[in-house]
Image (tube, rainbow, N blue to C red; front, top):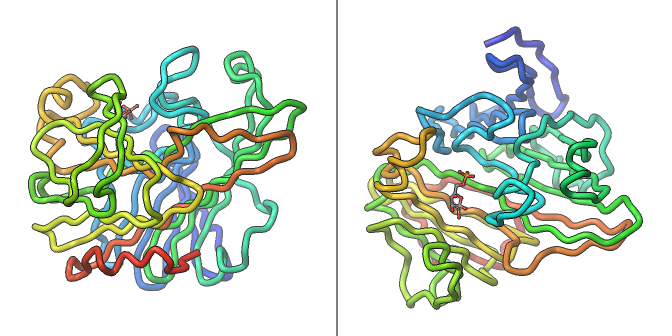
Length: 317
Ligand code: TA6
C-alpha cells in the first residue's frame, strides 16, 4: 500500500491513500471504528466494515485489480446501462473509469452530511465515451458512512447537453454471507421478475421469502423501498432501503457459472449474494438540465430483526 496523506474532515475522519496500482482510494471511518473504502477506479466501494472490523461486502480472492476491468465484488456503479448488450459493456462504462474527488459539489440535504464521514466523487464523459454514448452528463456520487455504521450511496445524474437521454442503473452490491444455503431475502414476495436465465421472461414470485438452491439471476420489478437479506448462520441481516430505484437484481452464479469466471473462486458462490438496488425495467429519461437521484442505505443488524421491522415509511435519509 502506498503512502497515506490524511485529509481530515471536521465531522469525521477520512483518509486518502493509494492501491498498489497507484490509484487513489478514500477510507471513511466513524468514531465507533466502522469503515468504508472507496476506489476512484469506478467509484467502487471495495470494503465496508462494521465497528468490530468484520467485512460486510464480498470481494473475490481471484479479483483482477487492474483497470479498466472492474474488481469482482464490493459495490460497483453500473451506468449508463445494466445487463444489456450492444456497443457498451454489459454494465456500462462508469465502473471502468477513474473518477475525481469534488470538494464543493452542489449541496445535498443537510441530513446527508450531518454526523457522517463522506466523500463526493464526479464522473464526466471522456471523448472516447462520447463515441459510444453521445450524451453530456455529470454523475455525482456521494459515499457516506454514518455514525451507526450504515453505508449510504447517493447518485445524481444531470443532463448537461442539448437533447434528452435515457439510461438504466444499478448499485451492483455483493453482500458477504456465511453460507448461501442459509440465506433468505425478504421484501420481494409476490413481485413480478424478469428471469435472466430464461431470456428475461416475466414470472411472478410466490408468497414467501426467496431461498437459494441453484443459480439465480433475476430483476424484481416495482419493489418496495426496503429489502432484507437474512444470513441465518451469522445471525446477521442486511437491510437495504432505497429511493429512486424501483427494481432489485438478485444474483448468485452457483457452481457452474462460478467455475466459468476467471476472477471468481469455484466455491465462492457459497459466500456471496448480489442484491442490487436498480432502475432497469423502465429506463430513466432526462431532459436537458434535469437531474435524477438514486439513493441507497445499507445497514447490517443482528438477525433478531425480522421483516415486520421493514417499516417502508421509516425516513432514513
Ligand atoms: O444480473 C446480474 C448480472 O448481470 C449477471 O448476469 C452476471 O453477469 C453478473 O451481473 C455479473 O456481472 P459482472 O459484469 O459484474 O461480471
